[in-house]
Amino acid sequence: MPTPTYPFDKVLVANRGEIAVRIIRGLRELGLHTVAVYSEADRTAAHTLLAHEAYPIGPAPAAESYLRGERLVEVARRAGAGAVHPGYGFLAENAAFARLCEDAGLVFIGPSPETIELMGNKLAARRRMTTSGVPVIPGSDQAVREPHAAARAADAIGYPVLLKAAAGGGGKGMRIVRAAAELPAALRQTMGEAKSSFGDDAVFLERYVENPKHIEVQVLGDGEGAAIHLFERECSVQRRHQKLIEESPSPSLDDALRARICAAAVRTAEAVSYRGAGTVEFVLSPAGEFFFLEMNTRLQVEHPVTELVTGVDLVRAQLDVAGGRGLRLSQAEVAQRGWAIEFRICAENPRRNFAPSIGAVTALREPSGPGVRVDSGIAEGCQVPIHYDPLLAKLIVWGEDRPRALARAERALQEYVLHGPIHNIPFHLWAIAQPAFVDGTYTTKFIETGFDPTTFEQPLAPDDQEALLAAGALFEAARRLSGSLESGAAYVALAPGREREASNWKCDALRRMTGRD
Image (cartoon, rainbow, N blue to C red):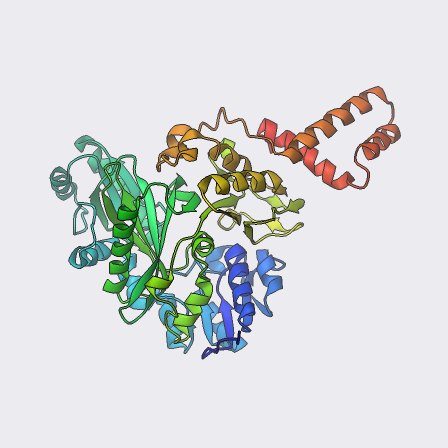
């Protein structure tokens, strides 16, 4: 198959970690020259080493490196890049950065600045969806900053209500209010958080949907008013409003509801003449009602789930639209096949309320085999810094149906060896064994109501079991023998040729059992 031609032959990837690696690999497959950027903490990171060229952009803190839009544009121009791919996070949904790129003559591989700006403001997005016939959660259509106005709006909506920052995202600037007496303080706190996080204290109210499902739909638009969907993903396993496990198809939808929710997502994209890949997020109530939540104007973390069930390369689709080649496929050509589940592998401690963890990756063995994909941004020996999101990699599995996908997920998670920072692989093994996950009835309250970090007994993978056996045998041998030389000999006899790996296993297994760093 001939390599497609684009109006650019070199692309700067304005990101880091696993998504930068994913994009760089996709660009290289298409014969495009790749440019990476890195902070001082990422000098030897995987994305830095993988790209054709790499340029420093500043100190480790994101505010001094990956969030410096003018610096990124300057590097792109100096490197001779013709386009910029923002990935997700950082400046991916920053309208000002998209404008900077376009003003500099660079192709921004994403939606227009105007679309980013419109959909980034939740109030403006709600109004546009209402006029487009997309179901919206009952709520206020204007910002509220004064307690009496908030009280009137809440009385009209009915308690409980959700206070939300108009410019918010990522689970920040949100607060549930269940009674009128709570409203003044909650409003003050939410406005303060909105101001500090987003530079805008505008807050609005929505009806709070109890025990909902979180469903999102992947869309592609040509930027001229035409759009298609690539079906849905279920994203209800969340901690602090941040997703941890995603799957497609959703076990919560029948064919009729799936068709309705996907059609609403297409209307959303068409209403804003969406360009490229985006995701429309919905809340699904226990009664089967769905409501528009927001639109993520970028490539999603969980995009591989859609790629595995549809066979569509979403990074290539983004490039085709940005490069003037259009959508390249019709709605009739898109179908779901099989079942895919994604697990976010994060450097965080489930026993400590998923607190971030840092340190060197001392051993790494990623699972493989049929139906297993790992999108990773780490390598053995690399450092996991404190400055960025704790996401290290994503494990995505595919099966002919959900039971087979779950069986494959269990096998792959058990094979995953990651030593150094404390991570959430044991949590994922716990999650997929829970009845509510197995039968697909789990909601966004899955962790909040079902997971107790104080009593969490982390399942042991086969390697951990082997490590404990080796550790026990070693300790017994050391007790019986005298002197460090004899103990060392006993150790080598237990694990010939695998001394360093066995040592890592033992330390990590014991740390997992105790929950101590």
